[in-house]
Image (cartoon, rainbow, N blue to C red; front, side, top):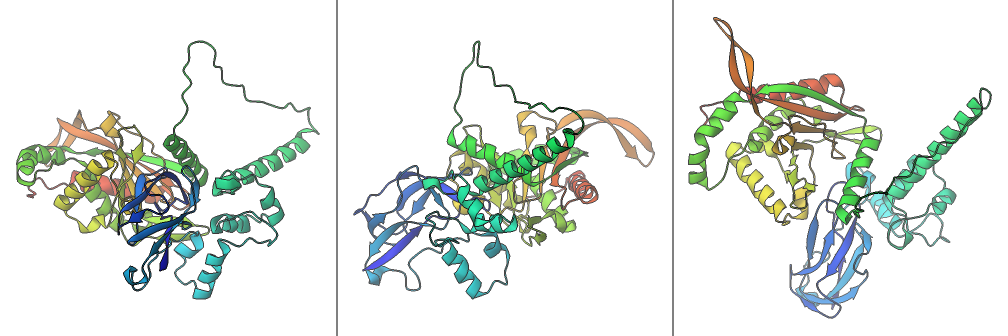
Length: 438
């Protein structure tokens, strides 16, 4: 008999834990290869976890509603040794630390040490679990282990999470700032403590509890604003060529390919071209280093029936023509609405596009999807009078105009790079070839 580990998979680049929603199999149940064993959820997507092999569920280590760190063993599957995969029967545990994931020159000895640190604490007498990510943050912020022990964990079983450490750092910095301010003001004038007023719940109100996904999205948005100093630039783009071309081909396109052609593939094509011109927009930040992504993987924000957003990713978007992008966009958008996206389809994005024009908005200031450093929003396309330059002089005409907005991380993307990149996207859209045939 072989004992196979079922490991909590990685569900996204910034995801470090997931919640077990439902066990579809119990201990002693037989399972087939790729048969669904349980359902899990993160702030990005709900997903089904298949069995890595044929066998019997031996031991389940976590209950429903438990929050489990990525890479941890959640169950064991007993199988005949002969039916187990030849090389390895356990799915490869995803990387769980920033250092391991982003540093290609890590030695095998260091990798082994990092793996052991998942279960070993700095103090052998301690019973608390600290993930490599938490340890890494504590090391970078010079948090002694004695202080780490005092942090109240919000994870499963009181486990200290990244959020807990960041909250501790914020409180510590706030306390230090308050103390310094108090000492400074005590020599000038008496101080008064300010307490934010409590929210009023009198009158006709309805109290609505946030659901699980809304809470996680809220945390992710606050984390992004806390991490990156956001700056937003805007340009107005003449979309007349693209609008007239789409109007001309959309009926025949649907008959020929059984697909609707929207503006999203056109936007993505222009973004991919502009990233090639300005590759330093396609980066992430790791501590004091910049990681330039050689693949151009563009995420597109898609609305779910619940009103929340999810960001499926088109991998290597620069290698697809407009027809290929159309098929990819429609497929991902349809399966996003049906909650049928696979975990790897929301991972490894390097740039994100969101369409606020779909809600009738002319422009927006989107929040960066960490760990990326830029996100672009497209507004609604509207007919407006505009000056048209011709060889014989200027004239006024009706044009289809749209605002583009780019929010970027001002730590590593300055106004020059952000502005030039956004203008380049606009230039590609305005130069759309009306004679294109697909």
